Length: 260
Ligand SMILES: CCN1C(=O)COc2cc(N(CC(F)(F)F)S(=O)(=O)c3ccc(C)c(C)c3)ccc21
Image (cartoon, helix red, strand yellow):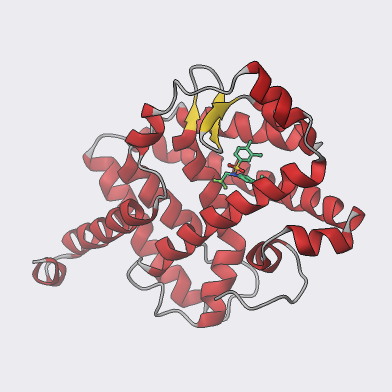
């Protein structure tokens, strides 16, 4: 039926794209939002927080880098299932993922954030900013929590998270794109699908708020890259053994193993 629907006016074909993106999100979101909410009561104890705070900077970064790399694999899978993404050149697929995967992870994280007590899901339980103290970058942690808190305030549905992350990923303004026009066409199709969905559910107000969020995302990610760079510069040899190759491929300019 999807094929039949897609030959009808563009409005219906944007339904087709919406269905594809929502399905892709559901299949690659790593944790279902129901699961994450059911775990909110599992908060780290005082002892567990102290244990995290007594870990070395290296170990905490390694744990986070591992979880981030794991989450990014799901974002890569999400991208590959969006109609049109695999039709882009290999180069442009990698440029979009290098530039947008962390942004998608940070948007998805609002689903694992509990705005009632300001805790986030990490290694099986919920914890506040104090859990990440030994990372030594409290400004980055604080900005992640603030971003998650403000995104939660929009009460995005799973459909809206799916469409918003697809819009964030398919950004035609990423540097080094070969076929910018082709990405811009795909981006505009997703944007139209997103706008149609929001209008139908009388959620137009969310659109203007989300465009501000996109700006916050950009600064949050550049802050992350700066922090990561300064961290790696202090421990060049260690870092190479600490972080999975995909992490290096995405967040440092070192020409490591190609993104598979
Ligand atoms: C700022 C980008 N960032 C890093 O620079 C280093 O690794 C990260 C990992 C994660 N994870 C979330 C994910 F698993 F979804 F990726 S986390 O390890 O579960 C985690 C959850 C929540 C917070 C506050 C932090 C600090 C970590 C998120 C962001 C980063």
